[in-house]
Each structure stands twice: as C-alpha cells, then as structure tokens.
Image 1 (cartoon, rainbow, N blue to C red):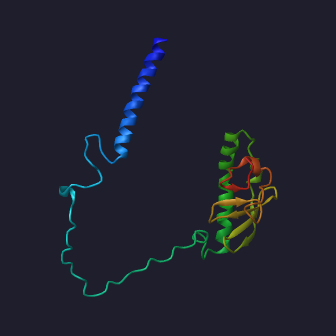
Image 2: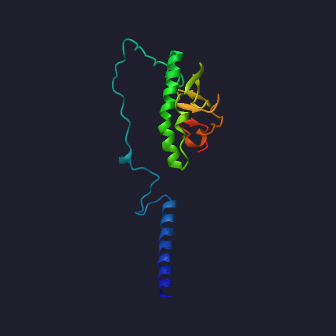
Amino acid sequence: MRTALVILSIVGVVGVVAAVLVVGLRDGGTDDGTDLDEPEPSDVVEPEEPSDVAEPEEPVDVVEPEEPADADQADTEDVPEDDLGEAAIDLFEASEAICADHAEAVGNSTIDPQHFAGAEVVEVRSGDPDRVVIADGTGIELVVVPARREIWGGDDPDVIMPNPYSFGCPPDLYVGTIS
C-alpha cells in the first residue's frame, strides 16, 4: 500500500511540474523569464555585401554527358549470334552448381545433371533484350537472356518455370520458379 502511495505522489509531482513548464513555454517565455518572440539587438546579424566577383570574359562550353546505354542492350549490343548462343549455354551450364546449392538450402532435391549436359542453342532472337532459346540435355526448352543473367521458362519472364527447374533453382536467376 505504501508503495502505491509513493508512486502516486511522484506521478502527481511530475504532472504539476510538466503543467507549469507547458503553460510557461506556451506563453512565449522560457523558464528564466525571458521572451523568445523578440530577438535581442546583439543577436541580429546583418548580411554581408557580396564582394566584387569577376564575370568570365568568354562563355564556358558545357559538355553534355553521353546518354547511358540501355541496360538491357549494354552487354549484347553488336554481339554476333554465335557469341550470344555461347554466352547463353555458358550461363546455363554454370547455373548447375547454383541450382544445386539453392535446392539443398531450401530442402528440395537437386536437378539431375543430365539436364545440364549437352544443352544446345535452338534459336537466337534479337530484340530488347536479346534472347536465346536453348534445349537442355533432356529436350526442355528454356529462354536465356544473357544481358540480364536470367533464364525464363518461356518467351515472357512471367511464365512459370518448368520442372525440374521450378523447385530446384533460385528465382533471381531462374525467373518464374516456385521455390
């Protein structure tokens, strides 16, 4: 009971002090009785006059920055189709280890290595972005976008990735995966 009375007394005192401070500050004063609305004459600083600045005699040439290359085309611009196909196969084959690590991390089974072995270029599609249709070692067709370092399940990144890639590969590389 005594503890409750002590706590109520402390709360009451704190409340009264807070109320006094709020009323005093609301009226524009400070706790030392000075007024905050009017600055003291010694506090006012006059702006300095600008010094004489020499104007340039000749206009300065402004160099415009070159427009940045489109991110989608930067890596594949003017790249022969053979090189695009090779880049796509290289990316696909390198993804085998990435998929194995991902599948293991999420608790899914790894993809059979026969899918990655013997992949072939089916078609190179120039555009924005350049895409390469490949067939994996078992004949499943995927679309590889070398400039974006992505592999799609179809012509569109929104297509769901076919099995076994949908559960065994990371979604930042195999766009449209479920895992």
